[in-house]
Length: 141
Image (tube, rainbow, N blue to C red; front, top):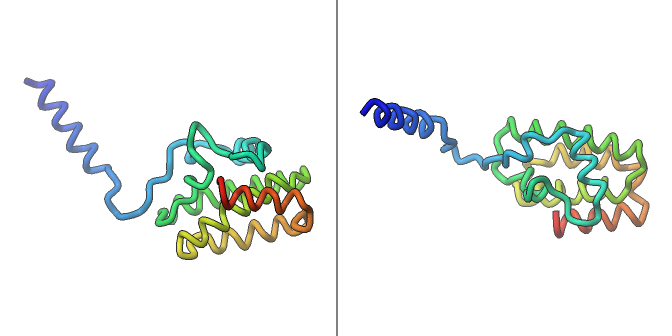
């Protein structure tokens, strides 16, 4: 009987912690990646990029909370800086393509992040590899 009461209490607590604010849930895999991990995953571009069967675009959902946007934005900018230093135009293009798509579908939520990433990418944007990466990021991100 005590086990049943404890299980019921835990269920009520779990329900109280569930997100019902209308904001999109950020996948666990996205919450636990580092900027270095993101940059390494992006090195596969223009092939599809993701973590644990989660597409990179799923890390930038429309309707994300402010905290999730800030988390992914900081990771993306740090990864973009690494990719720019490494001269990985395809990977940086892919990231920009994913965030560009998220910015359109997210009603501008990622507009400032997109501006910042495009600023980081500016030395590489004229390269064909950047264009290939950006196309792939928009379509398969």
